[in-house]
Length: 138
Image (cartoon, rainbow, N blue to C red; front, side, top):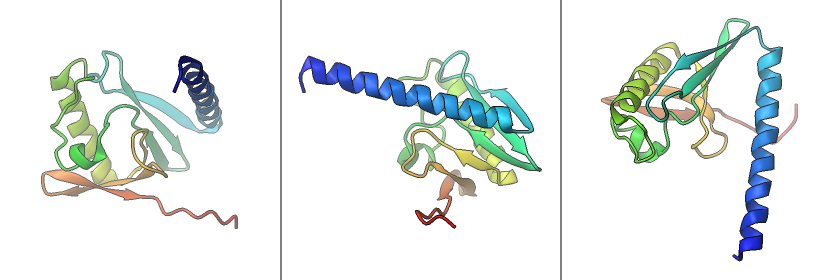
């Protein structure tokens, strides 16, 4: 890939990210309640966002987890991108425990499609249960 292709790809990813953020903002605007929960560690200002409507929750995890195959089984594992590994580890553990307990729907950026599902406790770690989806419109 030459520099022009890399720049073009970067622009496309940036535009997709902007469109995604605009779509999330619209969903937030249409929901009953939206709040942020501090989950500092990956960055000094990282938050998990919670959307609530009709008694149900959708929790947007952002960068709370990066490598599902490792961090679900061993949530104490951090990555080099975490600005404060101790806080990142603690935030992930407390949020995962709460989500596994209450069964809230979760949206995760760094998981395979569909990236929406639920966490279930399993031993010292967690299991990801992706949401069932269909390409059929009903």
